[in-house]
Image (cartoon, rainbow, N blue to C red; front, side, top):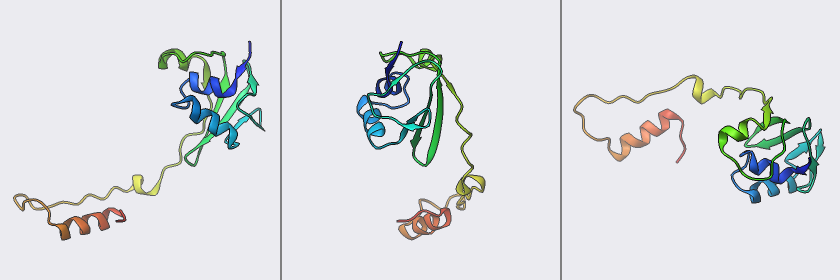
Length: 123
């Protein structure tokens, strides 16, 4: 049995909405067997689906094709996730904590700006 790739991506909860999965296919962010996939591309068991979201590539091997959205547990049985682990980012490897003296009260606006600067956040 074959099913449309956009429908399958939505039904196994890779994308939150069917529109998002269709848009990803239309923008060439979805590859089926290393070929850019249109939303109507048919997939079946054994096909490799790659999708790119937020600077990260996800690789799924189709185990079972389904057309209806199912529970997360059931959806996990329909594919094999072969995605590489995410690369550690610099801001997660060395946490910086702002510490105030006990009883010093709430931070002022100036204190808050200094804390944000220390944490590397932009305004």
